Image 1: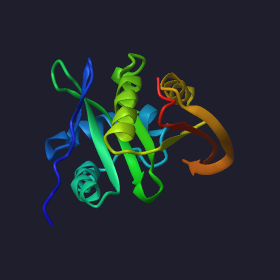
Image 2: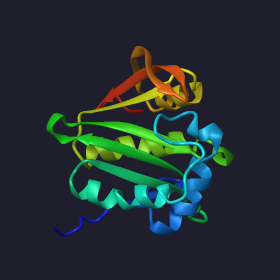
Image 3: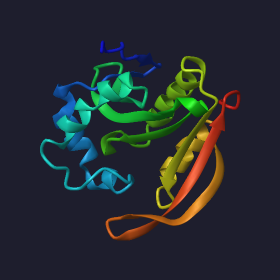
Image 4: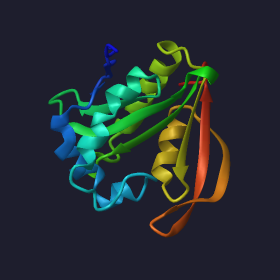
Length: 182
């Protein structure tokens, strides 16, 4: 099977593109920060050696199979890797779940909101999706603010839905339909 060409998205300050094996040490450093890892369900802490390489190796296959698109978030000015944003696709329902993380050094600068806007536009107008949802731990209000800034609406709370490091977490659900984005 021939690999499809991975999309690249550009915003005023960012480039969203494919992760490469050379990104693995930075992924391990940024995502492995305990303050980043605690905000996500699947990022471990400490971040094991080799895990970033294994994760990156799945991206093209999952893209080719229509399962997901995982974008590296890079600064446009110097191409520095600062985070990740992804869509887990459900094409049969014209929907996707968006997920993201940003390295702690880059928090509170609007980068994730900028990336989320670009990904939502791409999902609706390039992929033809109708709906995007996202989840966050209720203990992470910064993620809620990102979702609100891009026009997502609160759809509910799954109380004590998952465990992260032996702590039960409430999971808030937000969603947006094509035409609602701002």
